[in-house]
Every structure is written in structure tokens, then in C-alpha cells.
Image 1: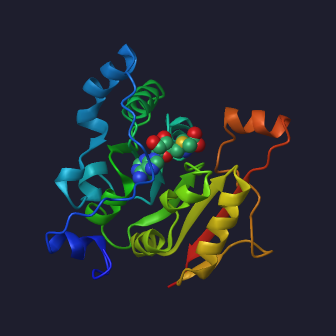
Image 2 (image 1 turned 135 degrees about the vertical axis):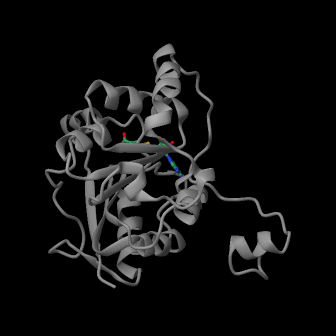
Length: 239
Ligand SMILES: C[S@@+](CC[C@H](N)C(=O)[O-])C[C@H]1O[C@@H](n2cnc3c(N)ncnc32)[C@H](O)[C@@H]1O
């Protein structure tokens, strides 16, 4: 891609470029419950990448602060947060189809109506579906750490993507990350500290205590018992 500055430029020139993705799509089997949830709840909760730019007021039927979560897994903490903050609109993005099914089933069961989901690559959703300055809080919890050094380029926190995220956050909006992999925490801190337009909310210029807004996951509770660390980072968009 050397003569092109971006993937889009290369594609526009008709050059095929292998995309580096932050995930490997494994078409795990759907349980009956997940398949039923996808069929039943997609019309009300599902958002399609192919529909392009989102009209938030129309999608939620109201104006409210927007919380967006990238890579919600099974959606456990996302549904919990949406239930706890009914005055906010929530959008989750996840590529793993079974997780999307579980999340919608869970939201339905808990009577959550302020949540919509994409089953799509978050990088493409950010490129094609979100208007500038629309997000109040952006969440990235336990993203795939890509342990091996030769895979670090697959980590979703990269300067180019972070610049894209900044443009979609409102001024004063916050990007909240959490990871249980120290080397990824250090990588996040390095990328975010160098990114223009962000201010670290940590008083010590590194990590913040887990805010009450982020529920403690089962996995994390187990990690605490085993003495594993978790690092939270919060950066505010200031320009
Ligand atoms: C390690 S899991 C963590 C899931 C969840 N946040 C949690 O804390 O339990 C990372 C998730 O990110 C999803 N993911 C990775 N890259 C993604 C992308 N570009 N767009 C959407 N989801 C992505 C994966 O499918 C996976 O479910």
C-alpha cells in the first residue's frame, strides 16, 4: 500500500489490499435460543451497516446521550448498563453472531428498550454509520489482546482508529477502556497519551480506578481471586 496513504485511497485506485482486522471470524454454532432471538428481535434491536449514516433520533424515538460499546461479547455488562441508565441510548457493536443473539435475548428478558446492536466490524461502522460528534461515552472492555508481538498490529487500539473515534465523540465525551493484559494496557496508554485532542482523566497520568458505571464481570471476579490485574483508562475528548 506504500504509494497510498489510506486503505480507502488504495481501494479507490482499484488496488486490492488485505485488511488487517482485530478479529478472526469464527462461525460458532448458534444455540436454539440465540437463533430465535436473532430472528425475533432483530427487527426492533438490529442495526444494519448497509443502511449507512444513522439517524439516532429516529432509531431511538428520542434525543438522549449516547453510549457506544465496541466488542460487547455476550453483552452481559452492556445489558446491565443499559438497564441501569434508562435515560441514555445504548449501541453495541459485535462481530460474533452468537454473542449478538445472547445479548438481544438478555435485553428482551430484562425489558431493556434503550439498546440497539450491530453485527458488524466496528471499524466499518465507525467509517460508514456514525455522524461526527455524536457519542457521549465510548466503551472498549477487554478487547482481544493479541498476545504475540507479531500480532500486535491487529490490536484495535491504533493511532489511526483512535483518530476516527475522536471525531465521533462529542467534545467532553469520554473513551473508556479496560483490559486485563498489562502489555495491552501499556500499549493503550502509549497510543492514547500521544493521540491529539484527548486528555487523560487519571490524576497520575496513567490508569483510573474502575468507575461504578462499569459492572464487574464474572471473569474479572475470578481474576481478582487469582491476583490478576485489571487496568481502566479514561480519556476525555478536549478538542
Ligand atoms: C475478548 S472479547 C471481550 C468481550 C466483552 N467486551 C467482555 O468484556 O466480556 C473481545 C470481543 O471483541 C469482538 N471484536 C473484536 N474486534 C471487533 C471489531 N472490529 N468489531 C466488533 N467486534 C469486535 C470479538 O468478537 C470479541 O467478542
